[in-house]
Length: 196
Image (cartoon, rainbow, N blue to C red; front, side, top):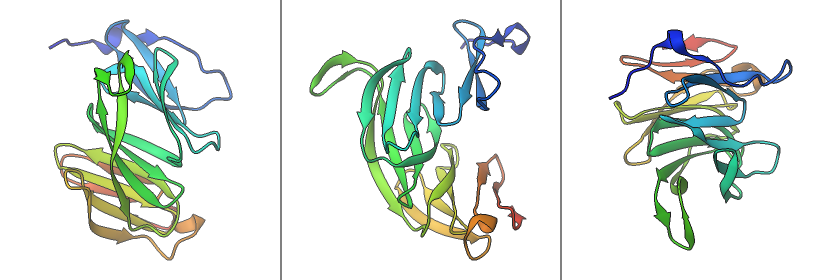
């Protein structure tokens, strides 16, 4: 197992003054920090591999070294998170939460090897756009937040609904815009209230 000291990391790219950074991902090969803007999710342990969405196209794109290797149409992705290197969770503008399997190697109908995502579950309970997701392999849990004022808990392994936490009657003021999972709690937040 490799370890990397954060003291040795240096920024790799400047996204510019008008592009907000959603997360910084350490690249253990180049020993640089990779900035990911909104609409981009770096693959854990493989920061040269990205999942991208947005721009109103409804597409989910898989990129390796800045080259598109897969396009999934009609994904309507608004947010995404990895539970581990094999499990991707996306929230969508069509009110669904989707589980994807990420795999590497040669793929059917393609001579190229590399990262690919395959849809495994479409989960429905929200009544408005899903705007936040978090996932934990350790807890086998997915949490999704929606503009409908709910945070839904899902079983990651089975792709089934568990329960909801409500933050109001829906609309922008009660949209659950932030969800997270740590070792002992699930946290959700809206502009109306926060609950743990």
